[in-house]
Length: 174
Image (cartoon, rainbow, N blue to C red; front, side, top):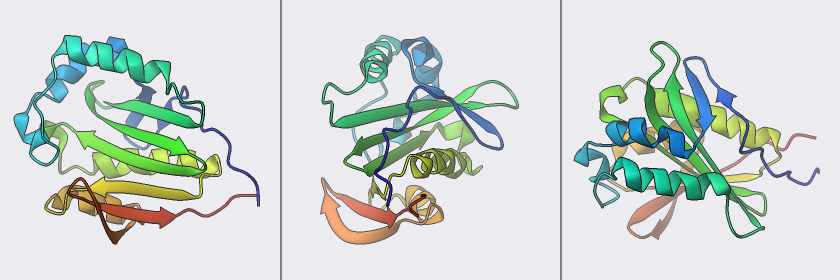
């Protein structure tokens, strides 16, 4: 079995309809509008961030984890058809295990974009030899549960901060 590599978090990723671009401060203005709907926070809490808050957050994310044993990957989703940003996917990788998260702005929900983007990220992680993937989903967030299920994750019954942990073992590539 091959040891996992650090996934390249600076590489753009691609899917059928989306370009996944490594997140940076330059995305903050457009993403503030994408994430402005308070309904996006119904399951996670908080409120929409301002462009300035996102700019500072994205600069920290783009700089990477201060912990050398941890890798942060964050990509904005650009819909190729119109060039607009629609959301993001992210991963935190530790010791060959990856946690995934995804958010798609309200106007673009229901089109399969979260699943498509998360699959592209999952393929990237699989190619890097990542063995286990988890996601944390609020038990009442049926759309996110559907994304997790489409990725091959299954609920574990474990809870963390009110969210249900989903998990999958990825095929190991030689």
